[in-house]
Image (cartoon, rainbow, N blue to C red; front, side, top):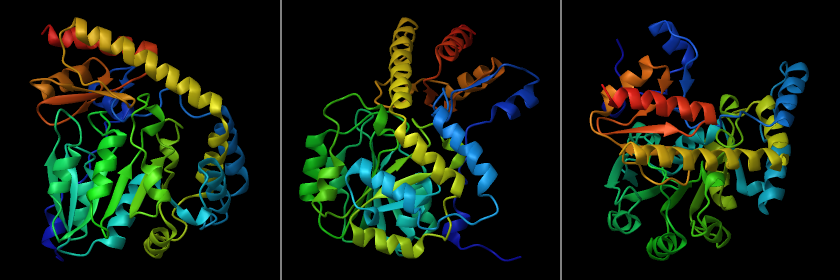
Length: 358
């Protein structure tokens, strides 16, 4: 039997959040809720749903626009960039992989935080590179320590802002210091999947450095606040030269026609974004209050989820499953819960109270 190279065999596959259907089938329960994958609990914009229906009727027998002309132009107008400075992906997740395969060769290094989005290290290892993981400080990216971890072999540096799984963010001043001191020739990948949820005015300004022509790739997605996780559509913004090289690696027709058209309509619906943020902020305040009353430590978040460092987290996770609540276990010392609808948040707190009383 053919064997994969050692750097591939050593990989552990990504394990997604448990689907509701699977949980109910396994445990024989009903009315479960999923608060594990940081999805928008109110779903997509009604206008986006109408675009999905229209797309199903008209386009499924045709290949999609491989260049994503109309979506790229809509994004370019919204962001005040050129269409040639945008690349579309099957979720921003695919763009991480494309960037790594474009700019990293075997033996090269990529610096990233830990814990952070696990796909960064997976993509680097799959390309034969070496992931240099720098511990968080106070649950935040330690950008100074990450800069100190750069070596002559470093080709990429990943920053999740806000960070997944902790929900913390880095400031303008911290990011500015990093960009002033990092050498040219290192691609700084700034993953801003949750940036629409940020309320802190001190949030880092990645676009300033993009407009200055620095080696930077900004990743964003329609999977989170836009509620289109099931359509897998994301995008990246970078100087044109970076996008040109990535397009050489990008698979043809990597984003489907329904996703492209739906994303255009989702961009237009500002009311849906406003409502999604309001629900998130209200849920955040409720969960902060309840968790504090239970004496459960939690990290203040700038995203749509809350990170809770708790002992015996795997048992808490499993017991919550039996109560019909799916959260995300983060190893043996933390869980992450998505901020849901008011009734979902209440069900989570009720289940959590019963679990910690065991």
